[in-house]
Image (tube, rainbow, N blue to C red; front, side, top):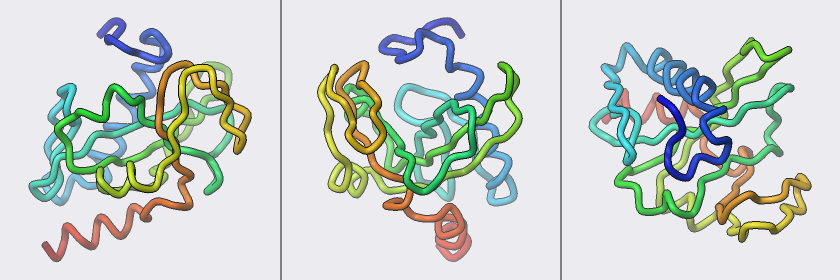
Length: 152
């Protein structure tokens, strides 16, 4: 796939991103999720367009970790975000965690905006581009999305 325009990791995160998308697709597979890899969204669940956001980590995520969306992606044509985390050990992916989800308006209402070069005081991360961050604990549990789709 190469390096996507605006890629934070210059293409190094492609594998983790694909693993996150596949894990979500597989989790919701019985609800007829459809992979739809575009700039605007990655899959359609129950008729709703979601973009999957994945972070690479060396440890399992905690509720205090943050999900991040680059500011330039605010214009994406999606209705919500699903956040995942891929844990690596010695460059090998060993675990994928579905961390939470949120509708697009709710995410940008609740998230904190950081400019490139700002330090996120919650975790010490120096932002490599303008972005929005929100702790997983502030998101909805993945099971709540499953229930909402089942009873749609």
